[in-house]
Length: 541
Ligand code: NAD
Image (cartoon, rainbow, N blue to C red):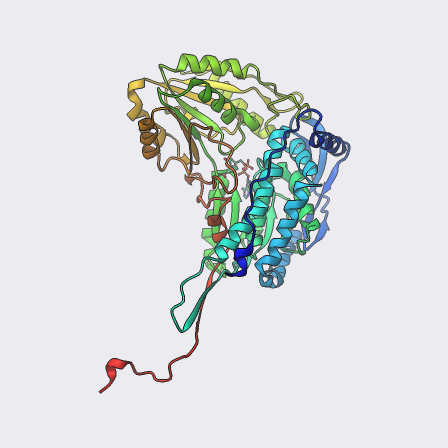
């Protein structure tokens, strides 16, 4: 047995309840108060050094935009190049560290996050990204802890994946890192995704330049500090907040670019891919491009669906975290025979939703991330209200006076190809198309062909034949497919995550498949007793 096999198997981190009187609730409340009382400086971290440019962007709470939480020091051109130089320089030592040595850093980070750092990261995610305590807990605590631990387990499994050796030789696959540096460009909506895009390549021996989303910089910066506390060597991950176009332009021009680990919108990934294409002959190696992008995730109900289960899944799937999950349910197809009951149940539930400041633990929803998102979603809702082909079933109200609040909204559309059924809105808006029950086969084709994305999707049915038909007809319509469950909430190690078509390269974060993209294996053959004569037996006289 190789030493790799000795590594423990992990289980998913338990989600804490934050119920009244619980110790975790007390700790979180204290941490929220501390973070609200200060304005945190968020500099770049390059080769372990903090670089404060003085070129500032404010970090504000989306649900209380008068409240300043931090100040980002946007990296200047010199700092961007210094970050790349630091990553390239750090690779020499880091790529020679053993997997066990590298893993120790991330396992220690997991334990720190599970313990003393948990409240800190959760409070930053709540305040900076407007997540409720529960939404923060499943993101910046549990999912990030799971990424830290399970990546280690997957890396060991990969290391154990070895070719056979015939008698007289030893064959071996050496899982080298990529040569150069990896550029991690990360989204606002999950602290865990931001962290994972940087740590997954680093675990495999790569060094990283990490450009966070400005709107997630508070939690992302604290995660960098946590990695430092866990002993991450200087320069292995370089934290580089700044103007996305300027940073990416400089980074993608460097010949040492070995890969991009991206999560965000399809349009931005297209831009990065195009730029890499234009630069391709100047790179020392062909960069690995891993991008998880947008979605227009569906819930398809069959006439045999359970109405209560469907209504709850639609509500949670569409409105948790204000619909700002890439996996959020945003288009639903409901048979006419069920729609009156589903609509009544859904509206009754939505009317009980409390929305507001996430530090009030009784709220189920907070605000959308910033003014740009608010204006975009508000524009869609205004157009919908004026559209005779759209019925506002509930919601539709918006208010940006204190925070960027958009009421959970259900829209019924007459036209199944309406832009509301095709376009990613990234807000708490669910569009519903009601189909005639007998059109089940046609509706399967409709779900498959309406949107360019293929990230997540769900079917609700109690008839097994209907489930089988949907699973087959929608095989390429979602990378994560759910049966009688909402299309959100993938768990590391349980539902490896990613979509195809225009939703990304489907490199399944939370599984060994993702880690495979960050290695460039070397095959080594050792022959024990080499031949001493070049002639083969058939050549004998
Ligand atoms: P975004 O594309 O606006 O930003 C993502 C990152 O790209 C940020 O770091 C941003 O600063 C950077 N960026 C923005 N413009 C850029 C440019 N011109 N050049 C280079 N970099 C640029 O996305 P977002 O608003 O942070 O996140 C929401 C999007 O992410 C949605 O489309 C959502 O579906 C998607 N998402 C997908 C997944 C998935 O796993 N498929 C997960 C989470 C989010």
